[in-house]
Length: 321
Image 1 (cartoon, rainbow, N blue to C red):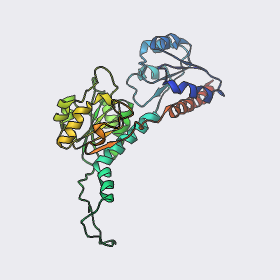
Image 2: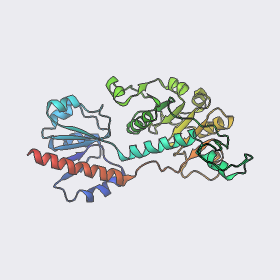
Image 3: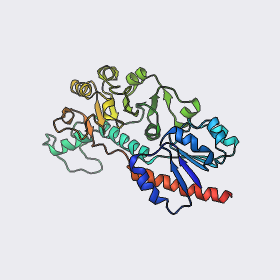
């Protein structure tokens, strides 16, 4: 079987992937660029893609194509109707890193909403509340006087809607949240219904969301996308979560908003400089939950997921002969 990974892979993935599939009767090519991938389409039976846009013209050149594996759940970049007319199956894969980052995003939201950090600190400090022995009817509820809130009914605004945001939306809806998103080109209505989300313009999303979570890549256009003006436009007491890239948020403006009391809190896994310098004001800013860029699943998880897909496809395609 000839298989092509059209998008290339992260640097550590290929070195892990190839030994995992050595036992397969497989001619695996990893294209370095889109042009390289398109040139190889006529000779492949299995196409694996993530961001590669597969249109009708591409499919027409792929004379021997017998299966397409999408890395991720979003298939808007693939001409699924043409594949279906040709009888070529299209399968999706939940990306391990997207799942892991989404888990971490929800953990940051919960940590802030339920005041985990402040609660742990309160447990270590003297209390003026009279201690009692508890039972079913007698207890000292919220003896630390923390202000916590449930997620049900809250509005979550996602900046960007790629694979991580898809997974965040699934989790947020399970908590009863209303999920909105913003991106350059809105999703098709059918995709919005599939994931239970609704488009909002960027400015409206900022000033109407109880929680804003960043899920766009770091480019020249998105650097400091969230600055002083954007933070000021957010609801008083709103939360900001960033598990994307540090420089998308202006950290100086973020610290000012936290110190002023306007922003209700910030959950950050990524920073403009990593490791975060020991003298960073973020370390002493109020109402923050910080983690050392650990949200992802790592190269090994993706390599193993692709290897599992390749084994499954080989069984399917061999069975079709």
